[in-house]
Length: 226
Image (cartoon, rainbow, N blue to C red; front, side, top):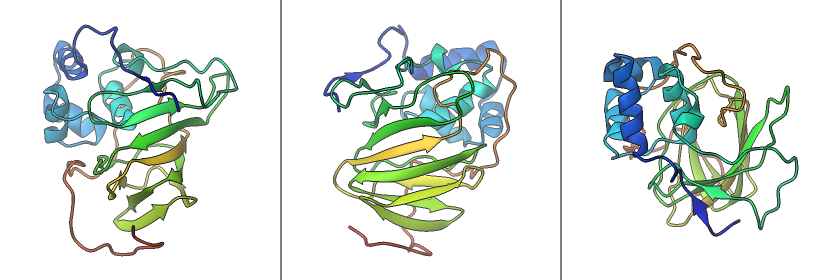
């Protein structure tokens, strides 16, 4: 892992400000964006005010509603080369939430797999969502809780989970240490093949704000808790 974390420094305004300006230029309300993206109004508002930084997948869903490419709001490493080296891969972030990414997959005509290494800080929790495609998590170091359609599972180093992304899912790092995982999906999280003006996509997801933890007892837990 590279020690230097790159951010979208070429953008003059913060991510939330640029998303808000784009929404307002289209004449869309917060509710319209939230409903179309399958996220809560409060979550979209927090993104625009810089209180919350979205995950990479959430940013993609918002960009779709705003008929924009993710590259207009986030600079990500290009997937030109098929080989990446662990000592030279750039590590990048969307904002100040502490989560960082390393791009693994390449971009070429017809590719359908997108892969990143994700470093999730202690306490980080994604927002509940569902979307097209499928995805897999493989825990490289640490431990992670994932909830799929209300069923919680604790994954530890060496564990994996593979599921259709249309199922409502949320993850969080329940530990006091950074969790590192390999994430592979078929959703175009890099915007490599997304044309400008992409039509809106409605997502069937939970309306709960993913930053708020639910402390009730898990329905089903597989594996060992750390």
